[in-house]
Length: 228
Image (cartoon, rainbow, N blue to C red; front, side):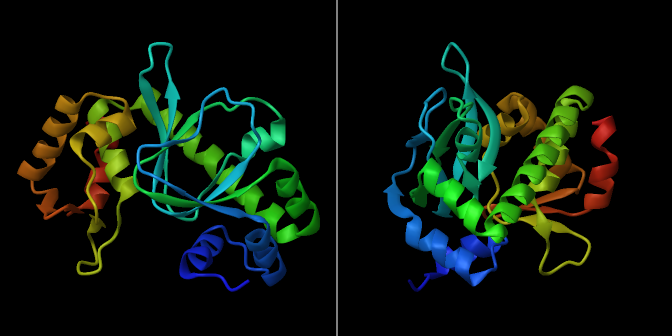
């Protein structure tokens, strides 16, 4: 089959470059359209489907006994998720909820294993993804235990940013998160988040423009992590 742009971008993001592996995944997957604010994977479910996010974004959360969402991660186009249940045969450990309208490619657990057995490129890509997630989770655990709420906000802003196209020393968050979203990401209150962002703006370390943030001196912000 001929891949569309979304497939190409997703496969590139997954670092699956072998043509046979790309074709096998595309021909195996079922495409689904999912509305915003819809649960794709429910915590404690027993299914083993694996998903590739082709378009849109989703958040990863844990649900407390009282139904409160505890934010874990965010997925954009090119992410693969659901693989842990397929690999371990255990229940789902978290909830995946769409933030926007999404298009996802879905494969069953047995199809997932066939792809790994038959295409080394697929297994290698998955190993890299799992290693990156372990690193990411370890970093967040460290931040939660070692950094203050402002420090965690600084770290999250740096993580969400990318090099600026217009200034060689600054970084940009093209679509800035709401204060509520940013607070959820670092497990603090909206009030603390708003106060911290306003303080950065007052000190000239952050500039708001339309829906974006510019981090004017990311090196200084990085040095401030432990003192926030």
